[in-house]
Amino acid sequence: MNITSNYKIAWFPEKLQSFKTKEVEPPIYVRIKPTNRCNHDCPTCIYMPNYYSASSMVRAQEMPWSKLSEVLDDLVEMKIKAITWSGGGEPLFHPNIVEAIQKARKGNIEQSIISNGQLLKDERAEELADFSWVRISFEYWDHDSFETFRGVPGRGFDIVLNNLREFAKQKSKDCTLGAGYIVSRENYKKIYGMTKLLKDVGFQNIRFSALEKIGMGDISQDKSAYGEKGPSTKARKAVEELRAREKELNLGSGCQDNFKEYHRKVEQEVLEELNRCRELDDDNFKVYDSYNIDFQSQASTSKKCYIQQIIPVVAGDSHVYNCHNKAYDKTGMIGSIENQRFKDLWYSKETKEKFNTFSPLKSCQNQVCSANARNIIISEIMDADGINFI
Image (cartoon, rainbow, N blue to C red):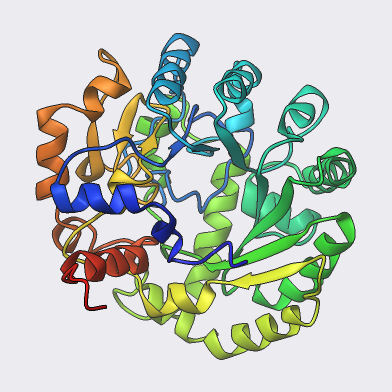
C-alpha cells in the first residue's frame, strides 16, 4: 500500500461529488496547530517571520482550552475522520494537549502528530501510543548540529533519541513511527548515517523533503513574533551562523529566496545519497523521497484549490487557513474562530465564496505548494465527462 499516494482522494467519492455540486461539505481531515509556543528556536522554522516574511505568527499565542475543546466538539459533530496535531509551535507544549487527545479519541477521530520529540515521554508518550502515526522532524545529525538547527543546547539530541527509543518499544503495533528529514546543502552528506541511526532506534520509515525557503529575514524585526525581548540568545546565534554559512555558498545576487538555484548546486549529490539510503529499505523500514518532487515543482500550477476543503488548518491564533503552507499567512486565511464556532465559519456564505474564488495562481506563487499534484489530479477528475462510456 502506498501511504504517500496523491490518489488517496479516490477513496472519498462523496467529497469529489461535492466539488461538482459546489456544496460545502465537512473536511475529511484537519490539521490542528494548538500552540505557537515551542521548546525549540529553529532558525529555519517556516512559520517564523525572520524566515518567511509573509508569516504573521506570534510566538506567544496558543488556543485556550475552551476554544480548542469547542473545536473538537465541532469536528466530532461534523464527523471529521482524522486530525494531525502539528505546529506552529510544538503541539506537545500545549498545556491541555493530553485532554485534547483524549477528547478526540472519545469522538472516534483518528489521530497523528508531527513533533520535535523532546517532550515525547511519560503521559504524553502513553497517549500517543495508539496514534495512527507519529512523525518526528529532523534536519540535524549530532549534538553540534542540533544546537545549530534547533537553537537550544545540544544535549537535546540525546533526549530526543532516548525518548524515541523508548516510544518505539511502548507504542502499539498499529502506530507507525516515522521521521521527516529536511534536506539542505548543510546536511545532505549526513543523511545516510542519520537514516541508519534512526532505523536502529526503531523508526519504521523516513521521508526526505527539500528545505522549502532559502534566505533569512531580519531577526531584529522579530518582536511581532517573539515579543519585546526578541529571540533567545541561542536562537539569535543560530540564525546569525546560518546566515554566515549561506553567504559562503555564493548563491549570487537576488537568489536568497531562489529554491531551485539553492538546491540545484547539490541536487545530483543529494540524489546519490538518497539512493544510498534506499539500500536500508526493507520490510520493516521504508524510505520515502519527496526531495526530487519538491525540487521539480514549487509554486502552484492549479487554477483551483480543492485541498482547502479537504485538509484545512486550525492554528494557534484561532484562525482557520487553507492549508499548512498558507498557515499564518493572511492571504490564506479562511476566517477567525475567536468569536464564532468552527462549524459556523465553515458553513458560512463567506467561506463558500472564498472557496469558489480563491486562486492559487495568484495567492500561492511565492511559496511551496505541497498540494499541487493533488489539486491537478482533482482538477482533471472535475474536467472529465461522467458518461457511462468509460
